[in-house]
Amino acid sequence: MNSARDLGYAVCRVCHTITADDGAACEMCGARVHARIPASLQRTWAFLIAGVAAYVPGNMLPIMITATPRGESPSTIVGGVVTLFHHGSYAIAAVILIASVAVPVSKFIVIAWVSASIRFDWKSDEHSRHRSHELVELLGAWSMVDVFVVAALAALIQLGGVMNVRPGPGAEYFALSVALTMLSARSLDTRLIWDAAKHG
Amino acid sequence: MRIETLTDAGIAINSRYTACLSCDLLLPRPELRLGELARCPRCGAVVLTNKPESAERTVALLSASATAYLLMAFYPFLEVSSSGLVNKISVADSIGVLWRTGYPVLAVFCLLLILVVPILRLMLTVVVAAHLLHRQHITLRLRRVYSTALRAAPWAMTDVFMLGVVVSLVKIGQLADIQLGIAFWALLAFTVFTALGAGAMCADTLWQRARLST
Image (tube, rainbow over all chains, first blue to last red; front, side):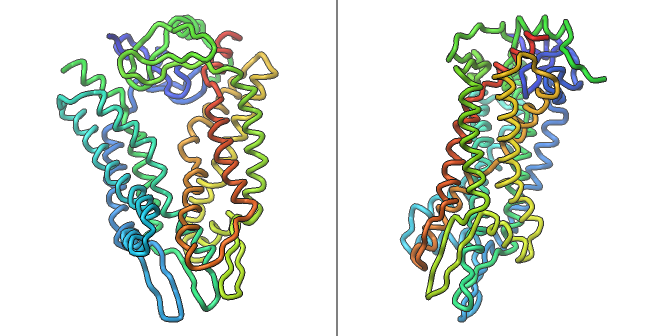
């Protein structure tokens, strides 16, 4: 089976248009066309490492601070999940746990695994790597949910002296981490998975 | 140099071949009947689609979304009352609070994801679909507009915000009395209609038309 690149063509990833001009602007839609995303793995790793780095303070620092007459109580993402669990809100606890912990962490693992497998030519099934990466790209944005929850709660709970909620510094790092890992996933060119397959 | 029409070489190869975006397999261009879609024989990704009444449905659904957007952006979506205090908030308030409490960068980022990118993407798509309905010739400018809309899509996060609102509702349900405002239902409508509208739009119809009309 022949890939377009082997025959001297590059395909626009926005509009499918085939061209012989690698690196030029697509004559159909104007997007830049590359047979393979340039320095795909380098970009992927750079965004991934930055994303993991931002994820650490995103989880360690409080994402939300609740102020009542009795004092201030900061809560981290995981802390919030534990509180919800104690209150018996299992479904919501699960949503937050999946969106803020399970999805980002599996994203880190999948991106690292797929890009390492390309770089070191590991023999593993192309379909499973391809599908894992697809899933990661699809779910990536949903990790933002906790940041939006904080924004909604902070706007809602402004009840004078009774109770006030404001965002914590963790929210900013967490949002940054989500954006960086989305960029990382998009930088990884899935066509490289199939290139490696052919030579193996 | 700006290329307004496609080069002959480009038309020649593209009328006979297409390639999988996910694995780069070069394929003879399949002839699709209305409603059919072609998958890549190697990796299984969708290669081409031919959606029925794509432009009509897209314009209809996205016009509904645009109406919902106006209600969503400017009306309160929740009203909380606790110990005699009442607080109404709109989507803009929940972004504004980030700004006021010392997170301007996060506020701008959320503004882009929740309000700016979704409406831009919607408007660009409607413009393109409306052209597809009424005009034969698809200009390079229009093709660029649609290309931009497609590339912006992953950053439109109204659906994620919707989930966030539902989660926060459940979180404070025990603390206070909550009433859903009109913007809550508008947000729901916007999310649903936008998803359906974006799904109804057939990009390949547009590119194919552009190819044939030059």
